[in-house]
Length: 334
Image 1 (cartoon, rainbow, N blue to C red):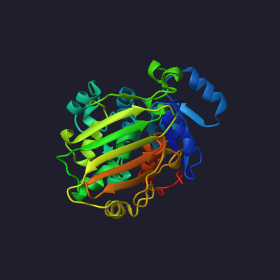
Image 2 (image 1 turned 120 degrees about the vertical axis):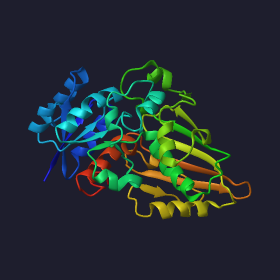
Image 3 (image 1 turned 90 degrees about the vertical axis):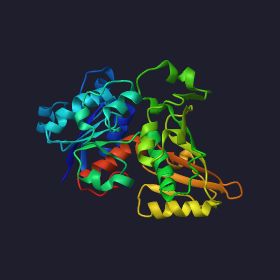
Image 4 (image 1 turned 180 degrees about the vertical axis):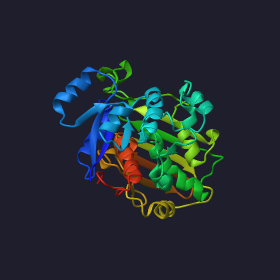
């Protein structure tokens, strides 16, 4: 049996990645839900054999759609989600619309009013490695941001194990490819601005910070995060610095990860003293983690790498989709 799965925002990078993954999924069929007319959509229509339907309650019912992936800006997700939920479909939102728990917190970090605040308490944060049971029974899943996915998978086990000197803080130095900024044209992400360049942005006020805090258990004063744009198309590599409360070897820290992620299909751990690079995770749904530590000074560096369009967006959305539909979690992703 094939489950029709709608994609809104299919002309963007995350939406296009969702089409790619679902087109090879053994149990799902992508259906392009037309939210607005644009040239990119018209061009895709000529090239793509994928079914299309209007992004309305009537349209998704007629197409027999079981779930919808929203690869849309937050304001569009807030507008469409209540309508789709009322139509009886599962909604997996790839924007930041439902990631935070209160409207006040959303306004603080996103600088906009939340127009569907009644759904914030219901939305399940879609990080399968920690929320698998809740995701499986949810009708609204908020797909994590790309930076927080790499950060939380690396940081949360260490905080939970109580080995981090929280008074010394954790520094997350995060670098991302240009596709993380979306497809919309912008001077900052144009070729001449990005190529042969390297820049930091949203320093001390990046909107992904609260996702790391609410998942890892850290307080804002304990966590320093800087996002940086590098001249590649895709990928995120985060170098995370902290001090341990007691002298620890890299092997001892890797053992903490091994205990946490022993049965996780999409977290790959490196042997102590080795760290991943971006080529290792490109076009995959894996998060790769490596550790280097100096017991004498109690310094530790963890490197966490993902593909921002796959594990950081569409791939993780399909992982969540599989859980909600009762399919094998790895379907279409390995």
